[in-house]
Structures are given as structure tokens and as C-alpha cells.
Amino acid sequence: MGLMSFSAPVSTWMDSEGNTIKLGQNYPNPAIGKTFIEVSFVGEATLTVYNVVGKVIEERVVTSNVITLDLSDYTEGIYLYTLESNGEKLTKRMTVKKP
Image (cartoon, rainbow, N blue to C red; front, side, top):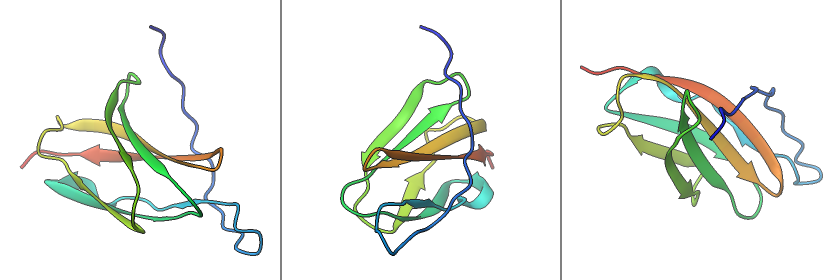
């Protein structure tokens, strides 16, 4: 399996058409224990968390505008998270630290 490449597009919001998604930076970052991510989307959305080699760590259907991630099973390091909705994707980076 090949490595995945990621780019971090700039988050924008166009509410006049309702066809653009918004992905906030997780907070706190670096995160210890748990972290929160604010999102905006229309319709259905999925959040996927990847490690730096592209392995899916977690995937979930988004049901609210604030996502809480429990990081207790994550190892310390860098992760990428992607919000996908209506064919659009935004990706951001987070750092996980252990206490």
C-alpha cells in the first residue's frame, strides 16, 4: 500500500450557497487526553483521522458542530484529520502528547 499525500487547504465559508464546509483547528493543540474540533457543513459529513503514514486511526459520521476526540488510545505524535461533506474535503494537522 502506498503512502498518502495530504495538503492543507485554506478553510473558507460561503453560506449563500450552502455548499462549502468549514473545519476548525483542534483545541487544545498539542492535545493531551481529548481535543475538540469545530465544524460547519450542510447535509452529512464524515471526520477521518490518519497517522502520518496514512493509516486510518478513526472514522466517524459527524452529528454536531463540535467534535470531541478521545485521544487515550492514540500514541504521541502528529495526526491529520479530514472533514468530508458533499464531495468537498478539508484537512488539518494536530499534535498529540502524552501526560
